[in-house]
Length: 208
Image (cartoon, rainbow, N blue to C red; front, top):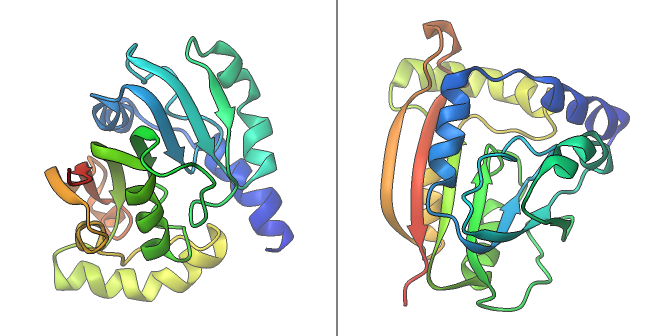
């Protein structure tokens, strides 16, 4: 990774403002979390303050030291213990069936080998436990998809490998997780933003 990816992108993401509607979507993704939660792509901690009281600990998977440091004040304000775990969601050191839930918000777009990462999610989840996800990906309309394919090479360079065209729902199902609930819709943003904001919100369970 170059200087842009290691130094600039984490600061852009940390500084990015989110309106109340996006914050509300994050809160919905966090609903039902409990016990030991593994959070993929923790970043600087945008989900802090949204974890339910039933969460006993968050194990943060975050490769960026810069993002981790930028989130220090947020972590200090959290009533729920947050510890930094692995640096790479594709290779988790956690034991099999050790997590009560996994949380991923705007992360699966960036992990290079998403199939490997989702296989790890399935492995560490307890049987019957769920991946809670809020992600963006491929849109349903051909016209929007065309723009996503055009813009994706630049998007990947500016935002450290972020893809615009991943079919998040299909990739989750291919991992062996069973989608329990899902909503697919554009985020409440101007129409010109559609290549970036087609979202997937839901839960996928590891079969018992």
